[in-house]
Length: 172
Picture (cartoon, rainbow, N blue to C red):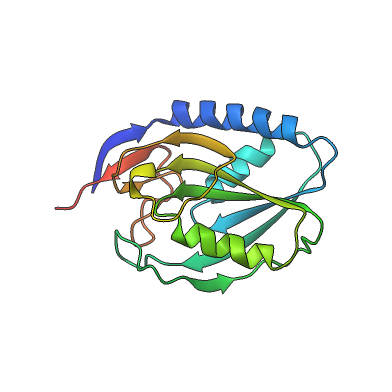
């Protein structure tokens, strides 16, 4: 059940405008590939890249670590791999949220194995209080408290992704 709003639609829009501007300033002379971590990134990646006026490629990677739980299993399974060649390219890895950092660290390792020129993480949300592995986030929307949140791509058992703002998930 949806609880209180943690991040409103207006706040999300403002973060995306700011992030797009920051990223555009970073893109000069680069041949970027934006890789979204499915499924949670879809709304964020779409809204973000539509605001960037630089030529870019988009691809996706999908891993699973949550299942139907509110806590990560700590075990990452590759569900869908990237198809674009990232060798000597600048990769912007787009995430909905960085929680413990373990899943993202595994995804970064998978992409590093393809020898990109650089990898920079772009995340809408971060929960630093939950971090188990240090992850550098180059472009961040905002930090949030240790709450399980849903909406704007974030889900619980595949539900609530389509909600336009981010809410706390309340359990009955």
